[in-house]
Image 1 (cartoon, one colour):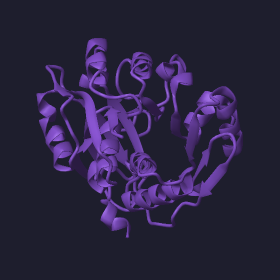
Image 2 (cartoon, rainbow, N blue to C red):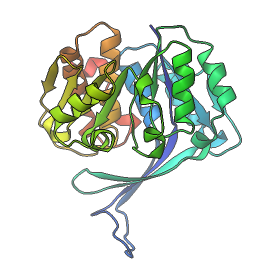
Image 3 (tube, rainbow, N blue to C red):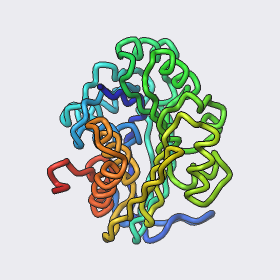
Image 4 (cartoon, rainbow, N blue to C red):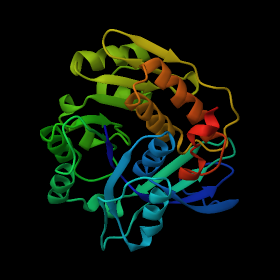
Amino acid sequence: MKILNFGSLNIDHVYQVPHFVTPGETLASTGYQKNAGGKGTNQSIALARAGAEVYHAGQIGEDGIFLKELLEADGVNTKWLKVGEVPTGHAMIQVNSQGQNCILICGGANASVTEDYMRQVFADFEEGDFVLFQNEIAGLPALLQYASEAGLKIVLNPSPIGPEILQSDLSLVDYFIMNEIEGFEITGKKDAIEILDEMYRRFPKAEVVLTLGGEGACFGNGNDHVFEAARKVTAVDTTAAGDTFTGYFFASLLEGAEPAEALRLATDAAAITVSRPGAACSIPKRSELK
């Protein structure tokens, strides 16, 4: 099976700061980097480095050609990656001295995806293939509908959580992968088990992966709850941790792994990612997990 990542591509402007900027404050950064980013970019690279056959669809401007080249260097198929006139989406990222991040996103080309383009992309895939979505591109409700009509298995990372998520037909989703904040926004529950159980009640066909930060991650499908503890590492930059986890988890599932093994592999990979600066550049290759 192939996996199509119909997702965002961003240029990340990363500022090292002693603390996050507060209202009315002007703060000098202690460092600056321009990196490849976007949840879509990061997740495609993670999938590829984990060994999956991944295709990426999305839109960039001429200023984002290096993102296309970066994906191709990792073996991602960019046949359906569109280069248009709208500038590439970008993110302004503050990283504090504890390695935590604060992110402001501008959609750019990610917000220019059309329904005609969506239909053209899905026509190139077969029933039973996987498609992965995040919420950093335009038209999520239509994307879910067209993917379902094409018979694809839908994976949704509802991040960043927002109105388009709650306005979408989430009953079409086969796999959710989300954090506690996103779980609370969808279910109104705060406890991990309660989130999993409420997700099953609302979306009984879906399987759910819930990431819990320093507490680890868990998986639920209505019958089983599987937990994996977080690794103890010194965090340098958590920017791509969730995207690494997503890529490695689903690459492992596509190989036929059970959820417990997929959780273990994804947790190991995310632990390496947070120990390094940057987003896409911090994602480990499969050989490093050994």
